[in-house]
Length: 226
Image (cartoon, rainbow, N blue to C red; front, side):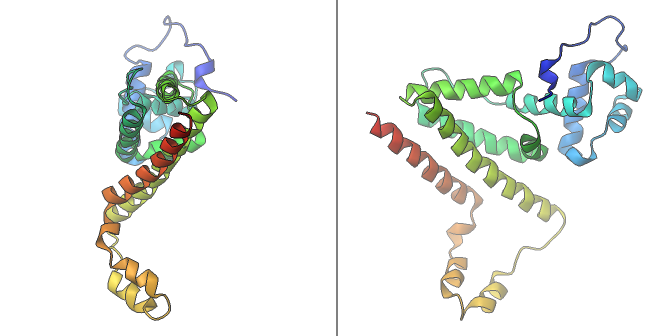
């Protein structure tokens, strides 16, 4: 596995004036937030910075390395729990932040699946969460699986939200529930009854219900250890 984190930064002498890795990453994140991963290129980034394309490679060896750096910056936006924090409060808080950041930086979700999160900020977040779960009495493997399970739920939910929001931005009208109900009323009455339950169409309510279900499972495991 190759990664920007395995290579040493280049020495300061000889680098192009007026540029820094921090400035490049900051501008790249702005472009990613606006246009997404697919439209980011080193040439476009250099133009936005008013620099020659090759000058970027002094600070960032490849486009993949740049994306790794950007992904790790997002993990720095988490507020890490205190070592003695209540595990459930800490876990819920981190998962709400995960969802918020995923909606703020939609490209981050797609980058998660393409790059391994081993940057210092990602590892700091993982370490803090593992420590918190272990204070609840879970062994290392169980603590890691618990955090992974909850975060997988949140990432999946946020991905659906991101796609839904993107669809709205394309001016696609919402589905007509009445027409759908008319289509299936005789063959699938339970499905049609579900369409009329307004509480199911609250994104916040559905997210909280799912989060409760996953955390309740972890609570049962923690309780069994006592």
